[in-house]
Length: 260
Image 1: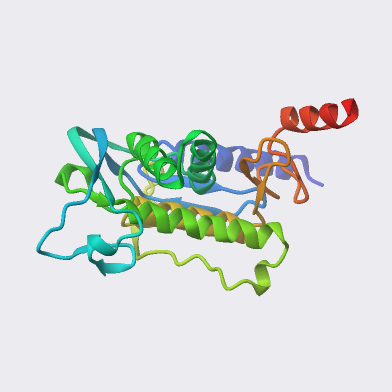
Image 2: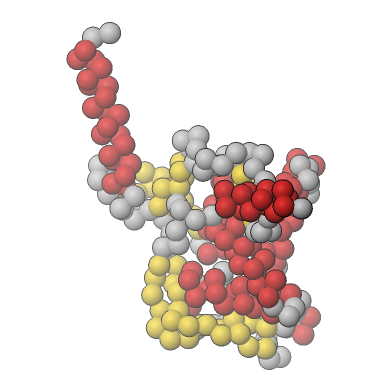
């Protein structure tokens, strides 16, 4: 094969890789998977300086959450999370962190130390909101968000995890209903060529979209046999039949079994 052609091909590949790295410095986040599929997300979300949990009062109006309108008296979790203080705008690490798995991991962690499931949910929502904001509400508005919003999302992720754990995903009624997503054609920050980006309208929508994308590219939700924490198998270099979230957990599990 002609040396000039090979040199030209190598230069094109190097330039493509450079453009992809530089593109990540632009407005959108490029979510990559092992098989090369990509998804551009243009998403930032307000995060308040602090949050607190309080019991819902009975208002004269009905509140809107994930599942439509409801009366707080009939809420599964009669609490709400309230933002306060100054607000910053952050970009969740959608290209690095599986957000749904992280949320489920926090819930599992607090479930071991909290006195009740309700308390575990409260602690999970507080910690997650301090990092990434409310699921639906914009923290700069100062409006509280029903804790039921968090309850329903975590319940959906748990149901999906169980479906994958028993290998019955294709027979499961559990599906990921991704919220309304806006699409826009924007100029590439480097080449100025048109690029299609997706814009979730809430943090919950971003989490759902990221999870749906990763599952469609071969990931599966599992629980570690040693620590019980959630992890994704079949993606990011982890085998599809993996039973442990890390080498450390695998070593600890096998050492404990040999010691018996």
